[in-house]
Image (cartoon, rainbow, N blue to C red):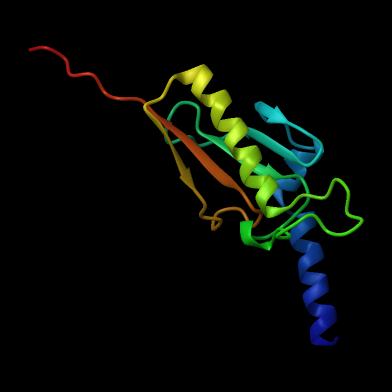
Amino acid sequence: MSLKIKRLTDKLEEVEDCIFCKIASGEIPCYKIWEDENYLAFLDIKPVAEGHTLVIPKKHYRWVWDLPRRQPVGGQGEPNYSEYWEKAREVKKIIDKKFHPEWVEIKVIGIDVPHAHIHLIPHCQIKAVAD
């Protein structure tokens, strides 16, 4: 098997086994926060804070920076890097309305699941308790 064919086979297996692709297709259920044609936002299964949300492109990309920089010519409706961040901003506004956080932390790690995803983690100020 040539190296090129091996890479393509590995890529196909990665997509077929991708839990986020299965969530995006509806094969695995999730608690959806927001969705459109190309992107999905849902609550993290292991949240670090209440409202911890993941924003993913429905199409499989290994890393956030793998999304095309701009809309491809003739690629109407295809996800792209700039639009992805705009969608994350829209989801952040939903989190603001629901949780009223002091701030929303953004993390792009990509180690646990090999599918592009942005973590939006709301943080609320901890009020001191009187002695």
